[in-house]
Amino acid sequence: MTPGKRMVVNIDNITLVETLLQYFFIVGLSPLFAGIFSKVKSMVESKKGPSILQPYYDLAKLLKKETLRPKGSGIVFIYAPYVIFGIYSLISLIIPALIPDPIYFTASTDFLGGAIMLLLAAFIKIAAAFGSNSNYSALGVSRMLSFNFLAEGTLITVFFAVSLITSTNNPYTTNHFLAANPLQNISVVHIFSTLAFFMLFLYETGKVPVESEGLMEFGMIDAATNYEYSGKLLAISKWNGYIKQFLLGSILLNVFLVPWWLNPTFPWVFLNIPVMFAKWLLLIGIVLVVETTLAKLRLFRVLDYLATAFAFSILFLIFTEVML
Image 1 (spheres, rainbow, N blue to C red):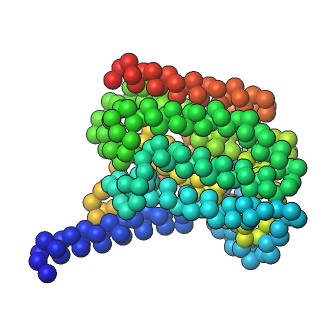
Image 2 (cartoon, rainbow, N blue to C red):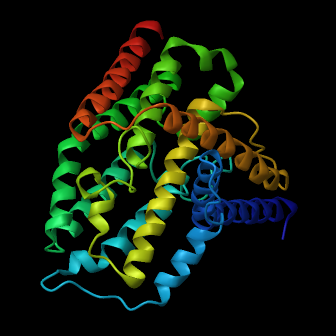
Image 3 (cartoon, rainbow, N blue to C red):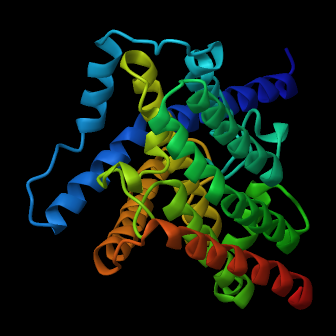
């Protein structure tokens, strides 16, 4: 075997290691960040709070429980959590969540493709909730459908406008451009995009000021779609929620807020793990400030909230066209 061929094999092996590292970091540690958020929130509220490992305990307990299927539920209800898990797994391999250089499956899609996959996962979740024949789930889905048209418009508009900055839909190229040009991060264009995506992140992850799982049934939106799940299916559904939160948070951190400090060189990529922990602690702190200083919105004000986020994304698109 020639030296050139050995080098190709070595590069492929490194890419495989980086791919597995990012995938298991996202899928395996996403519940941990949810646990850290709950723990820090309890500390801010002067409570003892659960362990940061509580999400893992909950998942392990649910995986051992019997799975009950509602009478009359269809095949979509049963397999939807697994399909959504697969979609989020693919998204985990196409965004710069830990490795700032392209890895395997990165070339399979781009910003807009990632947005479409997120919307596909939401559609499957809605279809599964309707298939459960539960009035509570149907109520939650009706609210979700009432609000999601603005959330989906914001997501697509922000990703489309971000791609105009670097004339590419590749999230890795965007991350490199923003990391190499710090002044772009304080431009009007970038500020509007960050505000829009941050507001969308709060809505999609069930954070204040939109809604919370701790409210009564009337205030629930996303959580209502999981009412009829139990056992293993409920565990996978909760895990999907953790992964989705981590994916959106990583995009917010590495593309909009702090695109720096990710090392692309092997084996120094392992240092990106503590870097991402630090970034997530920053994001958790920002979200807690919002949650503890702003009052919860009434349900009918959610449309106003999302309309504001959509307006920011439209302004971002306009400024992108005018200023670039």
